[in-house]
Image (cartoon, one colour):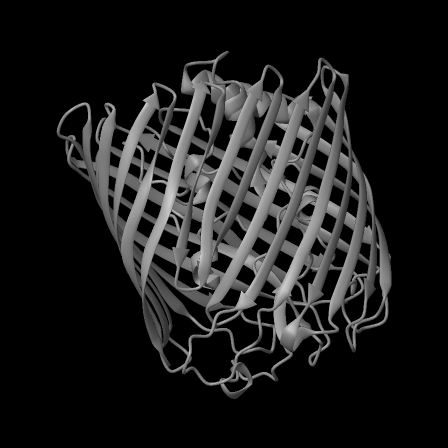
Length: 551
């Protein structure tokens, strides 16, 4: 991507909390619009991340959302009006007030049989700017997918298409305008999942994902690309001795940039011992070969892993390994205490932008947290899904909690990410908090040219943030939600001196007019303080109203 060494692209704002509830000035979302993606029904558990320091690809985030079972088709229509004092918030353009009107028709469907399930969720978001601060647009988004059982207890197949809009801003700005682009991803994933016995399991999966960027208004050379992850794993459960063998090949190729490629190949062996029925630990040994278009490096792997599950509602486990970049880890903990849910995850390992697109870009799924919290009360997945949706409706809590943003860069990166969330549900009140920290830095192997000679943007940034949300059930059909988010982005190395501090406040009232219709009224305030050349320290005030009807 032709830029100077200090030019960098990042999501318009880390305020995912506000974007989800009210929409940004230039990329409105319909408040209350149900965008849950059906999925995750009836097929074997996939090879999950969190088992190694680098993990393996889990299904797309939407595929784990709790949804109704069976066949259904559900059209919807959303409308919203936002009056903002600064449609150019976060850019070098002086503030200008505008009224943004959005209309968003959508449809969700699912067909489910014994061996095949298809699902989809599509919407068109038409945006009209009354004072012409931006061009009027129609932005499509959605998901289409299928899951199939080809050979019972052996061979399965997943495929899907995901399209979403992304807002970018150049820092320091060279083209002083906020703009969007669309990523469309095509995914094909055959996999094997077979149990030879209660203690011996084989899993193999081939994830192949092609990303195309269209509708690029950013003025930057954003690249299409391909991301693939091939994994094989054979596990013998410790009784009390156990073992595991796994191999992985992960590759990212940016097809518009001279086929810039990053590849990571790993083989591992693990020995495990079950000290008690609830605690097991072991040693890891293996070898890794990491390469880019410019250099490669081989390195041995050694480390430890442990997993402690004293009961159904508590888990602490992780992996710590010595690898080519230093020490990597993937540590997670969770606790469900009646109406309180606590989650923590801390990882350090190599990554790329295309690999990061496989996770939820906007934050931590609150639906997933609530799903785990209600597992003991609602053993049936369909009943639990309805309970989760009802909780989100009556409490007014957002569907996702804030998380660090996914920087756009065509280079390999090393990421150290910590996320902690807590959700407390009382009889009429609800509370949530999300704390996140991510340090992203350029990953250059010995022998690679300096980053500024590669014409690739630097990824050296530290993100810290906290999001708070309070929900109050005023009546059986009305709820109030108050949210605060504080986020700080600071550059280092090639990005030394670049920083952005953003604060947001939001107040929202949800009123269910009928079982299928929700009215949303709200106000927000955003404050921006930045040391970046060309970007104004600014603020924005907005009021909004939205209506969503599901037919």
